[in-house]
Length: 110
Image (cartoon, rainbow, N blue to C red; front, side, top):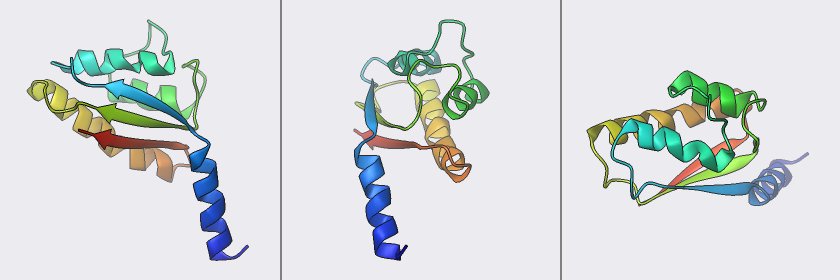
């Protein structure tokens, strides 16, 4: 398959991906960010740390909504220091997950 055909196939697959909006306007602490994962219908018992996020997104056996999906973070920046640090750390994890073959993407719309 030629490069241009591969690029078109990839963009077509991503255009058919579910978009999940995480609204950050009420995020004040890292726990608020973790609570927003109700968008993927994460169970109440899920962990509140990066390892739990990776497990729930990559394995596809924890959340009701599995990949592929695009996370869209809106209204970020109004929260406190803990929220900003947690979001930055999470955003940094996405390329690592993608490199391992996980079909997840993230977009920040402030």
